[in-house]
Image (cartoon, rainbow, N blue to C red; front, side):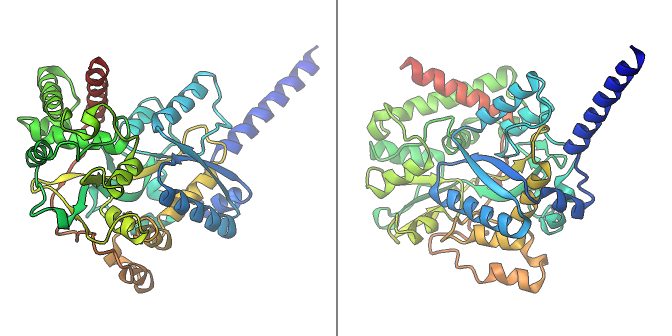
Length: 405
């Protein structure tokens, strides 16, 4: 009885060890990472609501296949929260290897939730990627801080964002330069403004921008949304939104589903002002024939919310090596410059372009950022993202208010 039992035990031990080794990846041995990645398929769960972004991800897939032998499958999602729930359910079921999600486009509240629940591939890996050397950590501190939460190398930045507004300059003597000025304009022009319905990220960002301007002490937004001060801030926001609602598009009884639908309303002359979380969005739409070339971008005098967006790898990803290779390629000067081209996407780079070698710097220098893209100086102050708990509170309050009416 002893020998068969011992053999069975050894077999299980060998199998367990092999499984652990299959899931282990040493980011410091990049040659080994690339060797292991070859032949893998990476399931990248990423927002699929913009055709241009989808096309860019498809381009990344072609590059990863030809260069590294990594197949990319873009799993289009509407809400990243559903991806977090999927990984959490796998962990609860004991599925600690061979998870469905290899890479996820993520930031803010969802990163905080995954980090808190131990759902992220660790230890620190992002700052060990070969192309991390070009990331502008000093000039763009949000590449290492996500909604006030330190990333600790558990996610890799791949783009910058800042809230900007857009409108046809031929219809305005002057653009509204604050939330209060915008509210005044909306009341004077009923039916000509709206915003995407939360929890759409762009719609929720608009609410947070309004929150910045209605709170007495904006510094509380950097802390968890708890206590009487937070309650008063949420109440003030809901009061402001309620006062605006009747003058919105369709009297505030319906809202566009996402950013793409919002731009569609602007293109169809149903509204006069739209907004995006990409400073090059208007130029991008002009370049693609979606908006007239008289559309211009503007921001508020007091600044607008800005951040970095990231990719993360779940702790139980099936193709960790392939995901690492993709994350590194996304940080390459070639991929970053291609992404920043307004004719492609227009998403700003996370790299320190001035510090790149001449050949790589030339990739950015030759870009025409478009007639409607503001310069870095004209973009003005960048307001930091509030603590992730504020987005949760804001979205819950908005849903309650709009369900009751």
